[in-house]
Length: 250
Image (cartoon, rainbow, N blue to C red; front, top):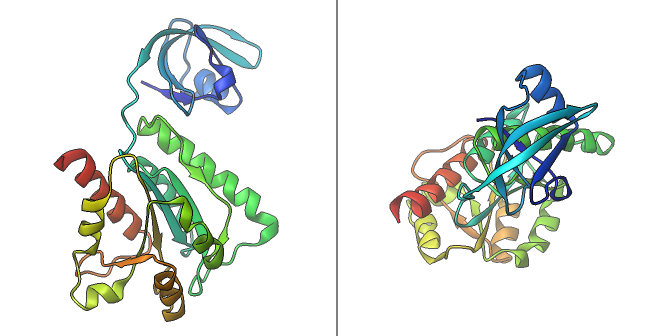
């Protein structure tokens, strides 16, 4: 069943008002009519089964049939800080990372990032990434759309350390030295409801200087196994591992 996200003020005890691009999707793409059922989430604490009641100019009016359980979010709050990769790989990270349960994404300007964001176009880039996240959240039946922050420098990211219970970064040098248990150890320490910040480098990984800054700030370097993963694969590996540990193994 098709899912749509609405702002809190668009949903009351009995009714949901849908407007904007979602109206076009409902009427022109899905070709829905009165009586069709949809699922609506207020992107916070409520998910409802709704029935389309009628159409008004530029909005769809749906009546709430029942509240649904909201249990599609990861038990821990995971933020992926991704150093800018080449091409459209960040789009992939946002899309698949949303499907895998990430709560937040922070684009980071890494020393080895080939891509440089033009400040004048950053808003447009973020609008695109937010749209990708919204569509992926709808497709995967998330209760919430992940938050996508503005571009950070590594220094700005480090300054946010105190916002998280656990801070880690993927470091291939740990894998080369044969250390493969740090991530498992951190997950064993983490408790349901806690927050994790995981920093992932671009193609070529982190520079030695960046790795030292992160380590000195208290970020834990982690291997992701004996194989070297691509920049866009690493965050998906991390999220899959966290999902398995907290949702399937327990």
